[in-house]
Image (cartoon, rainbow, N blue to C red; front, top):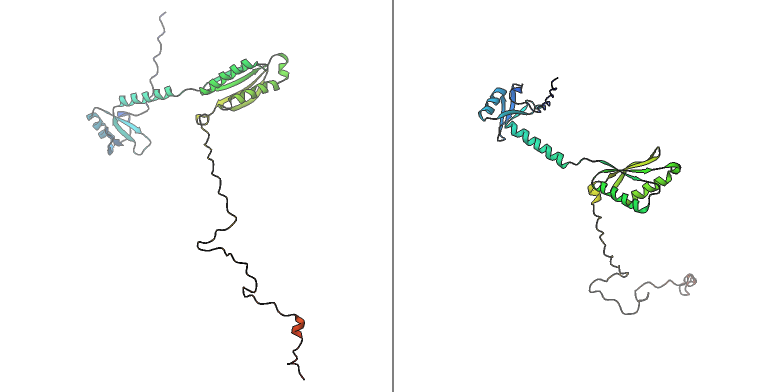
Length: 245
């Protein structure tokens, strides 16, 4: 029996119509140097592209009429593929890491595991915290919550809780996600101390040139105030000279 022939890999579907695949009668043409040639018949646009040893490529089929550009299509595809590769290289996929604890994890092991969790969060990965119960330890789930709360206090500057602690069989799990970089690296706002306000004087300043009087305080006679009226009895008695006979 002969070997089975492997099927060739399927060709990638072209994302742009080129040359004779453009079915419309008229197109808006952009020359190779970026200048606009206006609306031309598709055959005339293809003829212009052939004269420059280039291709007519449909870049915006949804426009009316469609927009085509005269270009080197092979170079255009190469540059697009290169940009996509660079974008994938710079984009790091986020993974879900797992750190296991026990309800009675010793302090040394606890510190060691927390360092692992912090390193995963600094690498922009999610972390699943898992507390494994054995035997009758499952009767006391509060011990697992205490362990998870201790971990949260240690990584609260790097992570946020996206899944609260939940019990699944004999395991308790919780998921943490890294904070945005601007929150982690954000610097506290500087505290601006205000200068103390000047003490206000209780006495008003006098106008320039006005001197403070040094003499005795004027009385009612000196100020020209009217004297009090005479007693009502004296005013009521008629004078002897003016009394009638």
